[in-house]
Length: 126
Length: 187
Image 1 (cartoon, each protein chain N blue to C red):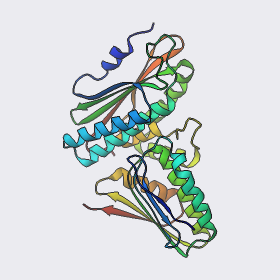
Image 2 (cartoon, rainbow over the protein chains, first blue to last red; image 1 turned 120 degrees about the vertical axis):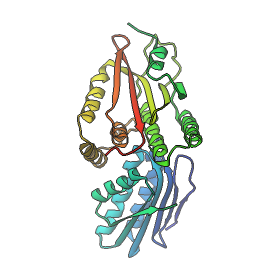
Image 3 (cartoon, each protein chain N blue to C red; image 1 turned 90 degrees about the vertical axis):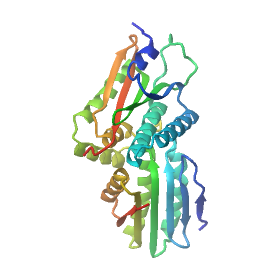
Image 4 (cartoon, rainbow over the protein chains, first blue to last red; image 1 turned 30 degrees about the vertical axis):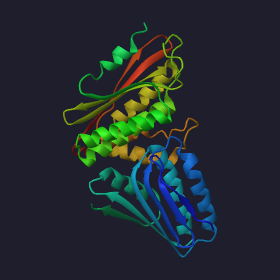
């Protein structure tokens, strides 16, 4: 599978989905007005990956800001990962948040409570 | 019945205004406002926690305008803005006030007010649960909104949503949302 590599902009995150390494990363800011337009290709790509995933998939989410419109799209990404996990493959989500950013920690905990995939909350200390 | 929107809006927040905007709320305007306010928060040496909260709430307020404003009344002086909104960002004692103003068609007032009242009678814990419920169960609407903006604002600020509807004419009200974002714990 071709990897997805998208450079970040002030309103959209940097994305690196590497199927051959099983490492997926979303990093930066995700505050576009139209988040579906941005996330749909990622969700579609995961549908493809889901057909033949690696034994272990690691997902790193390092968001500084995300808007509520992105929050639904990020949930769609996680739902694909949940399906991969359900099919007896290892999936691990590392949810990064900056020191003192309790809102970002809580957002990670929201997903953790909805999605049946192991989450690790990782504080970034500057 | 119609009244001077601008004066009325400016009365909602008068001192230490760091940004005022009125007009079309499109993607470029949102970018510009976010950049300007972010710079001012950095210049003002605000704690990163407050900076992030203000930024987040500002994103949601602007995108609420972007996704949800109704058309302006036919006698209103700005007929060219597709999405007319007003915004004031004001420095206050322990934080910032973000005030938005927009027209709401009379048919939509009841629904919006009901939504706000539901949020305002909820505890912080209930708001958290409401957020998760909407996140998990509601699809993104045709307008592009997720239905989470106001819930998110209430959750992040920990404050009740302070709002007014003022009747502009039989068909329209002018809606002001006055959001206080403060330092410190809200839980």
